[in-house]
Length: 303
Ligand code: SIN
Image (tube, rainbow, N blue to C red; front, side, top):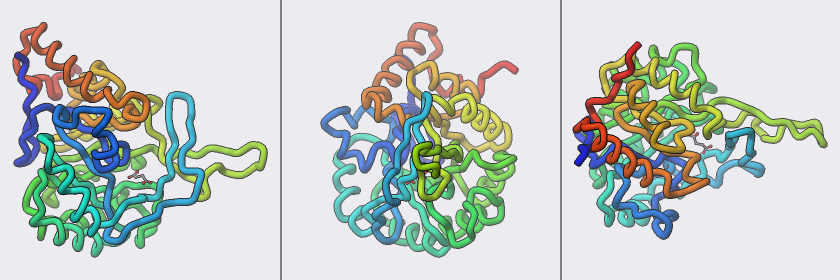
């Protein structure tokens, strides 16, 4: 048997395959389609202090091998999440990673404070959503000092595993990742969506009201893979790789480039079985090649 177990911070997972925040709701939406117990971890849709209705339509736009989104962090808000969504997920034998987002440092701090006693495995600090305006007018993940401020505040309250989700829309992702590591992050999730846009030619206007939207799906895989490589070269803490993963080969590429775990995002919209198929193929690959542990392959790319 191949050993798929991995450890990120103090979170122990039975395998390194997660489902990415924003592509899997709060888990219950997929429970009829996938055996949730098989997943390494479920990363829930980023929650905010108050419920959010999200952006106006259109919110999704298909591109060649990709998907642009401008959801605007639609979510049920902290209270409903704690009362209804988290207890539902706790029934399953899978890692639970709760994603949080805020427009101010203060909001992240309040979320961490409110969640510190709840039962789940790790907190994902999403500082990289391109579809909402922060009070600072730039993403927290686009400035090492802003990223540091958020993590320090969250760390004051939340003592278990903290993962920070970064944007690829920066010149040097390694610099931001290092700042997060120094501020107390246990892992870095790389990457959120790439900035993109689409044009409605009939009307001569941008498709999205915000003009910019986030591109995900297979179209971004080579770009995201390089960001994972750059990040893993810059920090000692684990990296969670994501961006266009559709099958086991994609996932393995991320692992060789330095990812300790991977997350399937847009792939869930095409075939919700993709994460489970990857887990099965990963185990088979380890067994057939007598490789033992998946953790041995992390960052094993020969450059
Ligand atoms: C959104 O809700 O607009 C997308 C979330 C994200 O990219 O972090």
